[in-house]
Image (cartoon, rainbow, N blue to C red; front, side, top):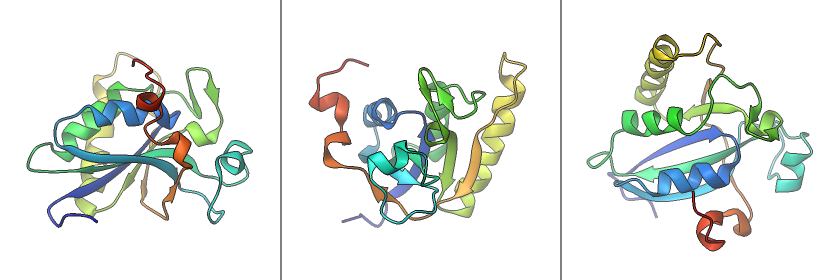
Length: 158
């Protein structure tokens, strides 16, 4: 059940395990889940997404209290936890499911994401362009249970 004052943000920045762990640590984040968004294949499984037949990105969906943490603060974390200049790749993970993408849920989120991307491009030390996509949120498919809070379940330090 979603509380009326809570908001949702959705980010893709590589493998969703580490991304979820980073957002879960933030004060004001009420809950997180990992899943798939941005594809054309209904109800994909992890194997479908890894086979690169669905067009989905691995994403973390963040439920947060905007009275405790702003969307802009979430965006700041997003930029810090991955390389937004790397096309369809983060670390050793390769494929369009690992793309850098912000899925916005409101017009305010869209504007904030676009402003943040421009700011990131102008302040980055890299001459490489920011390749992060900014797209409207679409159907969200929850990943299999063994992916949820993976680092916590496996006591992985991040």
